[in-house]
Amino acid sequence: RLAMNDEQRVARISAARDRFEAGLSSISPVFTQCTSRLPGHSHLRFSGLDAESMLINLDLLGVDAGSGAACSSGSIEPSHVLLAAGWPESEAKEALRFTFGKDTSLTEAVEAASRVAQAVRRYSSASAKA
Image (cartoon, rainbow, N blue to C red; front, side):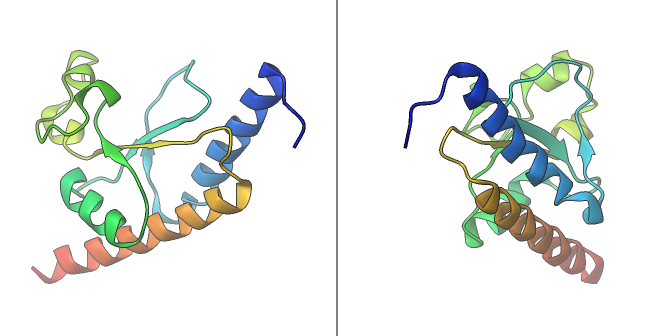
């Protein structure tokens, strides 16, 4: 594969992120409202679905994700970054972070969105029965 320049790399990564986000439209995620963001980051939440439980469901489906901000990775506490940005604690506990890199294909982004949708439906169904 030929080396890509920075502009091409950013466009490729952004396209994967955008394709992923478009694939989630049927399950109504709440995206963070940013005028500027990194090309490989998708930060979102699903109202009423706890991020920690979602991460377990996603892991079972082979999807890597994080909750909160990257600097709080591994913590079960809501992200201090999101709290400082004015998010209510209840919403910060629902936050999920997906990242895309230079090698992420559009096909992988679409498949990841499909698996996230599956996890949301599974978790929503289980929550409704509880």
